[in-house]
Amino acid sequence: MLVVGGGPAGSTAARLLAKAHEVAIAEEHQTAGEPLHCAGLVTRRGVPDFARKSILCEVKGARLHSPLGFTLTLEAKGSRACVVDRSLFDKIMFHSAVDAGAVPLMGASARSVIGSRDDVHTQLRTEGRLETVSSRVLVGADGHRSICRKSAGLPPPRHMLKGIQADLKGLEFDPDFVDLYLGRDVAPGFFAWVIPAGDLLRVGLCTWDTNRAPAEYLKKFLSRPQFAKGRKVSIAAGKIPLGVRRSAVNGRIMLIGDAACHAKPLSGGGVYTSVKGAELCARVVDAHLARGGPLEDYDPLWKAEFGRELSRAFRVRKVFLNLTDKKIEKALRLFSDPGVKKLLEEHGDIDYPASISGSVLKMAPKLAQFSPQIIRSLL
Ligand SMILES: Cc1cc2nc3c(=O)[nH]c(=O)nc-3n(C[C@H](O)[C@H](O)[C@H](O)COP(=O)(O)OP(=O)(O)OC[C@H]3O[C@@H](n4cnc5c(N)ncnc54)[C@H](O)[C@@H]3O)c2cc1C
Image (cartoon, rainbow, N blue to C red):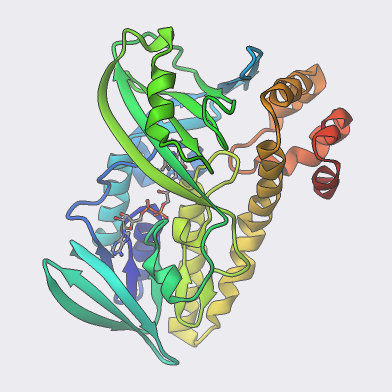
């Protein structure tokens, strides 16, 4: 068995499969978890118990800022999400795979993959040397650029977000809340975030479908007076593939995490679905290796667990993309209706945000004005 990619998806699959099978995990970098490319906001269900020490802090609410000045504050009674040290999180996940028996192939980059009826041949490049590894199944966990996805002939993501963030020191902030800033001038096609991360403040944004680099938007955002006293201690950038596809398996190549476009369309978060998808994939691969079970069983499993949610959320994203700044303001004001706000505060879940879209729309039917056709499909 070969797993390509040592992020949360690949490490989870390798850890679970190594318990009963011979597994190698190829990671193109020398160290797992570097370079950093994540804000680290995850629900507790995305952090296995053994990785809990990567948690920096917990948050219980969010403030959503419209481009025209209105702020919607959502505050839950207890913790709603945690912020992890993503680099440490990835290292713990990777080492747990190695501890379970997976063979680490560090600095090994997959260059090409050829699948046949009985096995898969993956060409790995390590320090200039090329070597072909043959395996009965290949798990592609190689992130948004996924060579495995291309080799399997599976389609690319529908939207590719470009993200950038800076960690700032020296600022005072509310450790219980994340702040999200919407608006075409702030972060076209997505949003900007301000997240407490221990003693640091993590300020970042993603953009979509714009010719201007996200760094330009971040520079402008950071020029706001609230960040004036902050000292930049690090900067990270990356991409997030959105838009789940019909299948994440072709022949003997299985995709998990960002390689499978399993990130959440409304938040851009992909850690939870990477870990969950990897667990489901490992279950199917184990059944295949042990008893010849069909690898195609993976598709219905991830669809039932989070695929339907991803599809619904992508439809909500389409509505969001059509909103002018004025309409964003109007929508946030509709969400501030006491009944809707209570529903969001009590039942909102960042892993399954679209699951309450039907109830929200019933309570605030005026939201249907933004895209009647798509919104009807969510009811
Ligand atoms: C700016 C930004 C902020 C984000 N914030 C959040 C957040 O707050 N919460 C959240 O849940 N998600 C967030 N995400 C998304 C999250 O980072 C990803 O969804 C998650 O990392 C997916 O995990 P993965 O294991 O599938 O892929 P990755 O974490 O990308 O891991 C893929 C691994 O494969 C390796 N690799 C790639 N190609 C090859 C190859 N050819 N050969 C060998 N190895 C290879 C890479 O080096 C990497 O280690 C953010 C993303 C960005 C860009």
